[in-house]
Image (cartoon, rainbow, N blue to C red; front, side, top):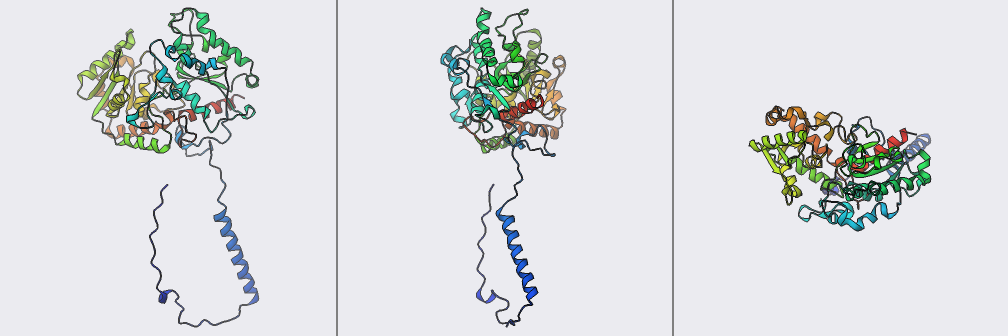
Length: 468
């Protein structure tokens, strides 16, 4: 809050200080009753003045106080900790989290994860973009979530006071290190050991795990191996009976078998420490010039349905003068450069979000960060995934084109049908969503806005309370 400097006031000239200067005031004694009444009036006035200004009203305005005028999805206006959220963090044996990082070169069969697990999962700083920017890996949310909760104002060290119990298992990093492990027993070993460890904890028995939760940085498919189907490297973590009794946060939930699974945002590159950093970025995106009607950042895919949609988007974008295409491929690519990716998206009104290797994409959250309205081709890319984070009315922030229609219509023509004022309204909603889809910097205890971790903890706590 800023305050305007008070202007100096010229002193009143001596001759004008008293209108009665040249008049004689008679010295008439007051009636004793009137004198007493005047004394009482003055005394009470002074006392009221002290009470009103010295002791401000004590109405509490901290977390989750209900306001009838608040939009239930407008999380940025809801404060955070009032006692209804109190999260206890399990101190797990190192083999379940930090111990895995000792072999960071082999945490992913495709890439060396050592640069990505640095800075508690934020990755390498993007110095040219500012202190809030990092080259964050798309499958690292579990580490960032852990770091945020450890330093969160709603954390409690007393399990008796906890409404939630967080199990900081780096299951995604472990899973990606075992994708090519042919021995299923060895692939499942750590997940089973975690289950056995939790069964021995006294706080598990209190509610049979209904107030416990995991946060995983990979899709649910990587933890739900179906022994009767093609083996693509998944383990059995989410199929374990004990795990089915708790809540699981994951960047992509199973749309049909994930009743205890809740989608959380993929981490993007922006991790601000203050609300000032957040507001400055939002204002920059509101003012960004967007010469391109639409854009696509992505690569072709194999598989009949995925290939058809992506090939059509690539084809139409390449043929249009109104589309900006950033085509990705193996090896070095501008698609791996945050500056190039956000540059394309911040210069576009609409960003195509076709399903990738699975239904969801990190690119969805990159586009929101860039103030670019996402265009979805499957309801499972966002609508069935992130109910805690996105408005129920999907038309407020996105465009939907069914996959089966994508090859029959001209995307450019469909987007041009949307009135300009409607596009502005949608873009404003998208930019308003940035805070709650962002992971704040873990080192900040009070970032000044509600981020993705705050939203998840609030929803988990409500869920745990309702299940008692």
